[in-house]
Image (tube, rainbow, N blue to C red; front, side):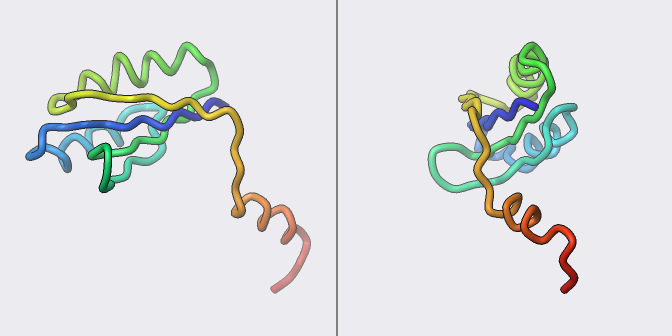
Length: 93
């Protein structure tokens, strides 16, 4: 599984509309409205590298209201949530 974090700049008056359209794209698992450098952050998860172009270049970038995107591709995932779940296997609360 490949994970990409996509920073999305939008037209200021279209943030909610863009977020909803991006959320509907296959391969997009979440979209966050954020403060800071970008207006939205989309989490993209696909099986094959080539699918990133389908989701990002042919999908997110073409949503009306999207001004610019910047894509960060994850090498590894570090998560306390995954570790907590692994340690909790077989234990009753």
